[in-house]
Image (tube, rainbow, N blue to C red; front, top):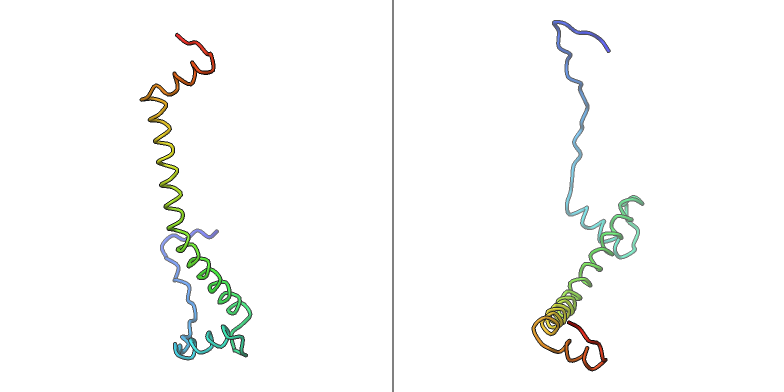
Length: 105
C-alpha cells in the first residue's frame, strides 16, 4: 500500500458502450422460445424463461389452494378453541374422570 501525503488518486475509469434495446424484438424472441421455435436467446436466457414460466404456474396453483388453506386453518382454530373451552369451562373432564374411576382432590 502506498503512502500518499498531498495528492489524491484519480478515480478509476471504465468503458461503457450502451446497446440499442428493442423491446418488441425482445418480446418476439421470448415468445419464440416459449413456443419452442428457433430463437436467438442464449441457453441461460432460455433456461431463465422456462424457470420463470414454471414459477408463475406454481404461483397460480398456490393462489387456488389459498381458499382451502384458509378453511383448514379456520377449522383447526375452532377445534383448538372448542377443546380449550370444553376442558376449562365445563365439567366434562370431571365426569370423564369419574367414569374411568379416577379420584382427585
